[in-house]
Amino acid sequence: MSADVSPLVERLGPSRVLTGPSIPPRYQTDAFRAHRGSLLEENRPPPAAVVLPQSVDEVVTVVRFVVEAGLKLVPWGGGTGLMGGARPTFDSIVLDLRNMRRVRSIDAASGTATVEAGIVLEVLDRRLRKRGLTLGHDPWSRPRATVGGAIGTNGIGYAGYLRGTMGDQVLGLEAVLANGSVIRTRPAARSTTGLDLKGLFIGSEGTLGIVTGATLRVFPVPEAEEIHAFRLKDFATGFAALGRLYDDGLTPSVMDFEETFEAPALPWSGEAGPPTLYLGFAGAEEIVAASWRIARRCLKAADARALPDREARDYWRTRHDIIYMHDEVSPGVTRADVALKETIFDYVHVALPRSRIMAFRRAALPILRHYDVHPIGFGLWTQPELVSVEVVKPVVGERVAAKAAVAGALDSLIRKAHVLGGSMEYVHGIGVKLAHLMGEELGTGVDLARRIKNALDPSGILNPGKLGL
Image 1 (cartoon, rainbow, N blue to C red):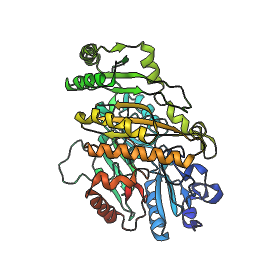
Image 2 (cartoon, rainbow, N blue to C red):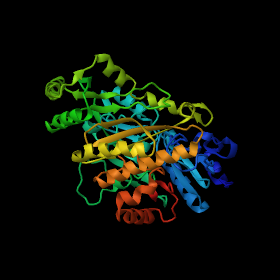
Image 3 (cartoon, one colour):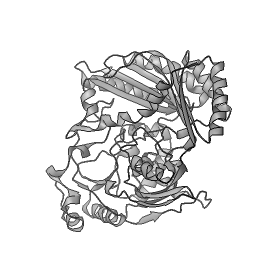
Image 4 (cartoon, rainbow, N blue to C red):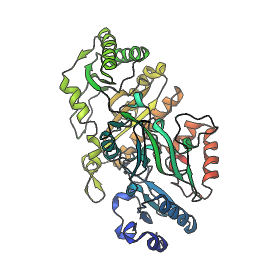
């Protein structure tokens, strides 16, 4: 689309308003790539323009221009979203917030940091560690993801059970609304003053407002961190042991429990095997030592076998490495695009009542067999109620059919989770990939969500189509 963005060029300068051939191909999509199980179109049109603001006032300028020009606005953080939440439309302006990366203040005594939305999580964590503090949010995408993107999806990281989701760590935020006004909520630890306004923007993927800054809880660097790995004889035994461990009141800083399956066409090494548990605790040395005494008692009762310490060290050292698969090897082409060219690879992350986990597992494997889709792993992450299933299917010359099979299998898994009283996503948001299931997820609540969207964004300019809005 040819849009006259000269008013923005005049205000911001040509180096911060990209159009036509100057728009890099990476802005046509985010980390929701062609190797995923989806029937959505693979080849995306470029946006009308990309704008790189450096201040809240400049974001206001862009929002008001978009309204007057009849365009749409898609916020962009690190481009690490896995559900297409930053996918633009041909009539949209992409708002790349990464030039808004200032740390406005750090209050060590209060355990807070006030930052702009475009700062990368890992960069912020490095700044905090110089003050003896650390960020509570540690997702796999930490070296690339931004604060604003993490708030938009309400993502969860490795320390999710100990620290909560990204939204749990937001005390206050700043956002630009669709009418160009700016809202700033008070960064209070607790408030009983009616509607939690900041909650409107946490997890709403930029559909209700553009988050430009936030005050976050930050935490002292723990005195001790200790992670170990164990092998369990089967999933049911390990699941029961984890239940006892959590019921004893322990708060792991790391918990990753997964069984693996043999599958074809994997571009990395993998084999079937009994479940492995990575478990860690962080805090004062006495708390960590006491936690491990209780945890080992639970695991010993389950005949868990301790693995060499290098297993846990390697797991922790490489926990962010997968993000580098999304680095470009040529314009618009990532390492993942190359590695998974002949493979459809995907996953679901469902939250279920603990009492329904085994029923979901019993149903999941036959569902995948029905679609001729191969499981890679079935596991739990951060707490016993959060389930992850990874799958793969070789293309074998029938790319569209393979994508459809994986998409059908994952939708069926999600619908089974719904029947069992669960939710279809706990970590990556909805974007466009799961938007078609939002009516089933929310029921009549989807109409309320759309009324809220219409009230805050009557012209529908903010990240259209995401979250089914």
